[in-house]
Image (cartoon, rainbow, N blue to C red; front, side, top):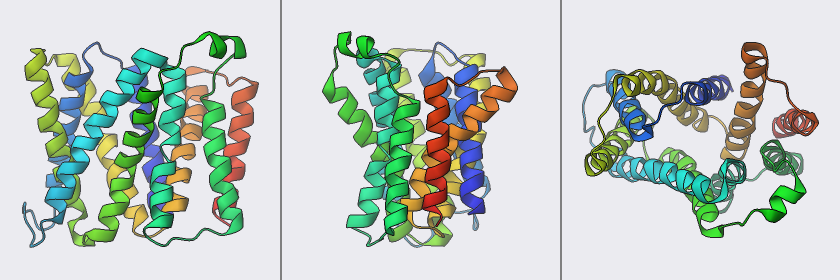
Length: 277
């Protein structure tokens, strides 16, 4: 449980960095972020080798790294077509993918109360990120394909850690992380070269600030999956991050939650209780 708590704290730090240290060149930030993560992953390898007798960390890490970048691109495209609020809802709904995967393929079976906790957690994420008004929702044209891609790619990116947890060896967790960020960084570099966008000093600063908590949250989440079932880890991680961000935003930036968001926060607390029964 300690790994899960630390993972959601560092994920919340990452979200706050990206929110309050914005820049006009996101792929420059992504590149430096992935380089930072890859360097940290390599520095923590034991033994410090790029091959440890099993190719699974390499090929699965490569696939995961490309899915990471694809999920970011899909989210950006969805925000352009549907707006940030609706896209955020479908990003949160992506948590259903690893949950369904763990139940159908890996034989995990939540109790009735834990199942209710999963449903409540997903509902809380939707309510927290929900549309502010019915009239706005009715007038807004919805592009379904970008939303579905956002849900599936974000969910798949999350699920890959569980897949490696089943297929890989625990001593190769760090190597898996290294190849994720290596291939995500290489793919991002290709995009930058095609767009001919330079990496600025601001990109370097923001990328490093994002990269450290990104690596720590990813590594700790993988460790948590080695100890706890996925149907508990993923919804707790998803809504727990929302709760930490809300509390931090109140104390650091004096941002207040409206009634809907306060209700969602209560639902999150109830969901976390049910999930841990």
